[in-house]
Amino acid sequence: MYVAEWKHANYRSLSACDAGAFGTDHCEEFLLEILGIAPERNLGSPDVPLIDEVLHEGNHEFYWSPIRFCGWQVDSPTNTGRTACPGLDSTYGAYLGRWMDGTL
Image (cartoon, rainbow, N blue to C red):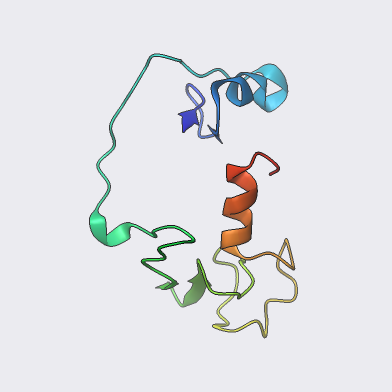
């Protein structure tokens, strides 16, 4: 993963980073930083989903279930109430797949 210098944008490749934000983002090719990630916060992957439902400040989100991903916008634990979510037909897993294959 490449993170734009002095910004929060994340990219799947160095070339995608350098083209990001209308060409104003830049990533360093040889700068490496290992980030400590707590094992209990590992979502896993589509093949090995470790964490699915998460509750935060009364809002539910599901990372791998076929429930619409709303980005912490609604308190509904089901698709009911999620009809106004951006990406109406997308789950978190679908967004992640699109990010990984470069179509997002």
